[in-house]
Length: 292
Length: 105
Image 1 (spheres, each protein chain N blue to C red):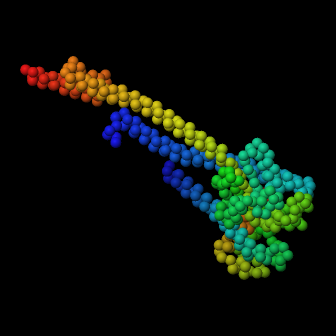
Image 2 (cartoon, rainbow over the protein chains, first blue to last red):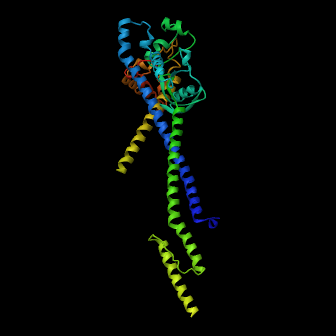
Image 3 (cartoon, rainbow over the protein chains, first blue to last red):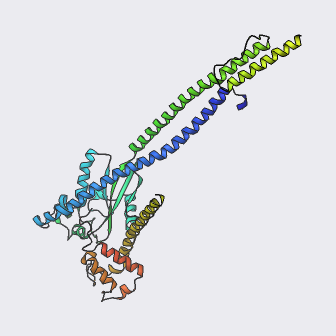
């Protein structure tokens, strides 16, 4: 098939095949790299979010709660003494600025039913409890949307028992607020929940596709200009001289011996022109001999 | 340079595995604690309620290793070496001087 094509078409075909292969390669490799980039970016965001929350909790546990207890005894003021409450409220404030983030303190046995773990979160808690992993990070789907999530375990410690032992032992105001049916029976060491941050990946994926689109466009534009330059060079350096040679050779074959093969380059085409000119001189000599 | 990188990679993997297995073993220790300790030591039972925070890390190590469970020494004697080690890990992780975050959530 290629043999029947003109040089120009043959080169254009080769360039087109090269373009398709290169574009496929660029899109494939680019997608992998950009997806890694998306994952890294999402992981950094969740890490930052979790770090802020952990720092808040540590600040409360180290500075606020002890002083509060010293000043008020066992007064129930969860906003300043219960990590889960403080973090849930802080998360709500953060979500005003960054509504795309979801922060949850999820438990299979929570006081506040808003914190009841869904099936995915229950599996995470079970994995933490079995020691399958110490921390979990990865992609997941929540209410039909794609998220990158980072989860850490919540183990019940001595001070958790203050509220989560039995309704009888728990602060009265807390029992009045949350009821007596859930959130009790915790023992030290129990795996009682997970802190989990969900960062949506739809926007990141969209950005990845946009970047990929830009990359593919850049490659296409480059190929287009390369094609123009190569086409111009081939036409000027090869095709046009060959067409001129064909024209000159036609004239010579019809007896117009005044014509000669001329090129203004110093390359293989020049060598060909010189060879044709020598052949023309030989032909003239041979015809002179024949005439004599 | 390459050798240095390989050693660093191996070191990182060893630390990662150690951290992962520490968590896994602590949780195994918790299962042993639930099975062997909490069967008697709950509120209202004859063993009385206990919690890991009742003792310091050193006290728990001494308690298990020298078997101070005088009421029923066979409980600790009957443990495998692995159960023994994991139980100590768990109890020390929640001991009164463990330094874990003292705030729920």
